[in-house]
Structure formats: C-alpha cells, structure tokens
Image 1: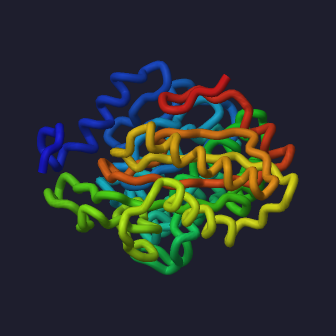
Image 2: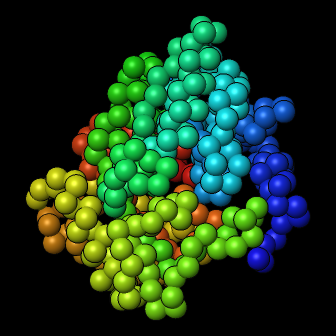
Image 3: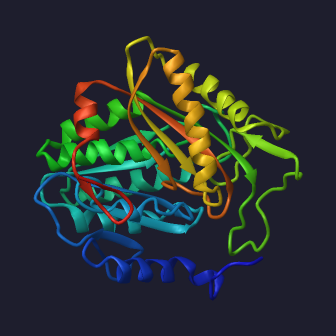
Length: 330
C-alpha cells in the first residue's frame, strides 16, 4: 500500500485538522467530535449530511453558504455514530430546525435516525431525506433499496439554497425530496481503491476489465466486462439512467460527471461530451453541467453520471449563490 499518511488509524482525525487549517474562513471543528460546521452560524433552517470518510470533498467540502451547515465524518467507508450526528445537529440548530441529508446505506440511515430521535428528545425539530439515486442495483451490499451516490450533491445545493432563502423546515425538506425524486445516477470503475486500515485493494479487476454499476465503497455493480471506448461506457450508463428517469423532448436537466478519485479531468470531459450528445439526441436541454471530483472513493479510478430533471423552481435554486471550500458559484 502506497499512501501519503502517517498512522492509518489517525487518517480521519488528521484530515479534519487539515481541513480546518486550510479553510478557517468557511468551517470550524466541534471540539471532541468528527464534525465540521460553518464558521458563521446562520439564523435559518440548517442542513447536516455526512457518512464514512474517503469520499472527499464530500461532505465537509460542501459546508458553507448555500449548501451544508454541518458535516459528520465517520471512519473510512463507515457510518458516523449517532452521538457524532447528534453533536452536529446541536451545533447547527438555530431554533428553526435541521434537515438531515442521508445517503441510503443501512448504517447511515439507522445512525442518523437515532440521532434525530436524540435531538427530538432535546426539543430540536428534525426532518430527513434519504437519497437513493444509484439506478445500477437494488438491495445490494449495505443497502436496502437503491444506494445513494453523487446525486446527493444536487440535494445539498438545492436544499441549501432554499434554506438560505429563508424556507421553513417543511419547505426545505420538500424541495430536497423533489430533487431525490428527479435525480438518477450510475457509475463504473476501472480500478479499485485501498482502505488505509485494510492495506490492500478492496477488489480486483483484470487489466482489460471494468466493473459497471460499482458502488462508492467498492460494492459490486451489475457486471464486469472488457474495457471499451469512453462513448460505449458512457452510453451504457446513460441507457440505465434513461430507463429510470422519464425525459421528454423539451425537458431540462442538470448534469454531474463525477470522478471517483483517480480519473483525469481529460477523461471526465470526454465522457461529458457523450452525455451531452445523448441528451441532445433526445431533445433534452442541459442547463448546467458540473465536471470534477465531488464524491470520490479514495483513489478509485472511474466515474459516475448524475442527471437531475429540473423545472423553474429547481433551476432557480440550482443557480443560486454558493460559497464552500469545494463548491463556489456566484
């Protein structure tokens, strides 16, 4: 294993220290907990997300104006404990309630819901949305139903904008659920990643082999096949997305082409070219495209595509100002 770390058991702690040192104008640490919150606590509905570490910049990189108010970091690829999530809820609550954005993994759902119950006992009003945008498989490793992957970034952005605009907790929860209901994602992997504590790759692929539908923790996808061209791989992912998201001529979408950690931007832009062509061929207009590393899997090679169907309400919130360490939109 080759990694730029010190002691494997300390990677999350040292990463969080480094994040705060790099971005003090955006974030601060909740003392004694693996929780990052906004440096400037707002008088509004607050958003908390999180999960296992190893997906950076998710989730701490999206703490700031117009997105998250708090992010909870579990151990690598491991759900944060309920007490950590509870501390995040308490730290960000201004009295107007807290929305939990939860990716659909059994541990995350259970622990975030337990934290919500703890917060309710303290008189804090908490709502939740569960993101299940991955159309590759259902009822897979760690998951009942579809997994939550990079489409979660659209939830952070749009629900965060609604909260920043003064929306009530029910309104922010409603718009977040609207995003969940209109986003579909699918990914693939060229090569595995190595969890520091494990010290070896999480799975094996032959030199000429790829995995289609791979999960962000190395969970199995739909199948393995011989590597093909960027256009063929992207078309396969988009076919599955089109089968799960109703798009008609004249519809508008936002696109996220997300790198998994070790994929050059060159290759992500090549994939995006094919995504744009396939959408245009259906008469669908792309109103906004994001390309880059938003939700990674350590150093996994591969990418995912997320398509969000938008209306005027979602589009307005998507284009709203955001300013976070990993996402700036003026």
